[in-house]
Length: 130
Image (tube, rainbow, N blue to C red; front, top):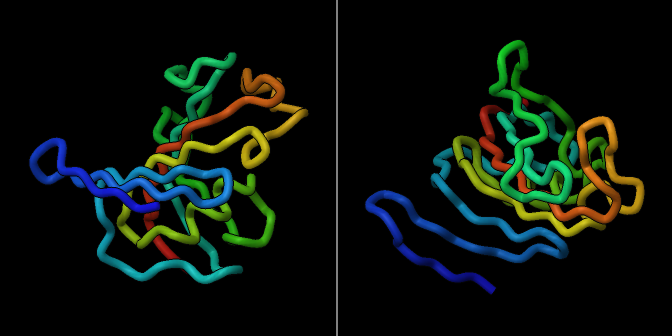
């Protein structure tokens, strides 16, 4: 299902459900899309601390943090990132709303305040493809 709405000037929202991930485009990209196994570098902010989808638990934009790089689509990150980032273009900024099974699942991630079976939201910007 793809829907498109213009809610503010120059902001197009496009929602796509990808098996446990709902993607909302904040800013369209202009570059290539990553291929499975390709190195991707992103800025990311994660929300869902202690079950509150408005509470940040981590960001590459926080002081002392750096952009995060990983091979997309090969299981180095949570499934929601693998599926969601594969559908993004370089330069794109999107929110990925991940169901619990596409996030940290039954175990959660207690060190970051992510409870078991938590839905999470990530705002991701694809900075570069390797």
